Length: 80
Image 1 (cartoon, rainbow, N blue to C red):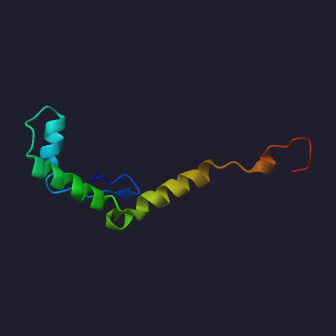
Image 2 (image 1 turned 60 degrees about the vertical axis):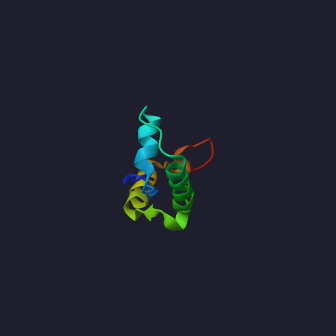
Image 3 (image 1 turned 45 degrees about the horizontal axis):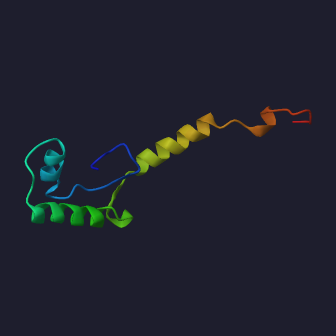
């Protein structure tokens, strides 16, 4: 969540800090606050609600293109 190095980033729910703190051993958030955080998370997980970073996609596509090897380079006894 809230990344800039992935094709799509999930927006952090507003009360997510309380849930994350609890996961790290902090105080337990109120049930209503935790429910709100997870309800928002489910909505934010929808692709149309994510933040799209086309530069990450373009960069990864370029890396794949640079590492792709042409099959004719593997001459299995036939002509290239």
